[in-house]
Image 1 (tube, one colour):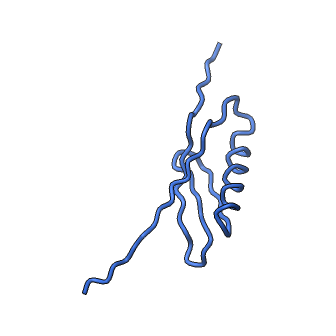
Image 2 (cartoon, rainbow, N blue to C red; image 1 turned 90 degrees about the horizontal axis):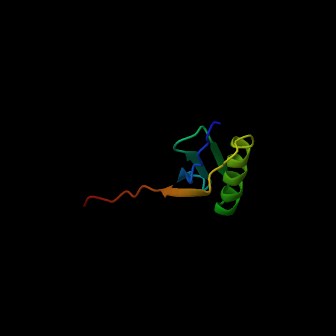
Length: 76
């Protein structure tokens, strides 16, 4: 009997677009989504993960959204 293991957590790198929207890309799977606001992004990520794991017996237990941001400082 083949044993399947559960991925306990799946991680998305989230960046904010110049227009204010968000883009989320999974670091370990080919899952990508975007949204106009944070709440919509959360829904879209859950839907994308569910679609990606629809036939998998043990989907991830948790989804981590890692917000990445840049800050530019004036050097004066």
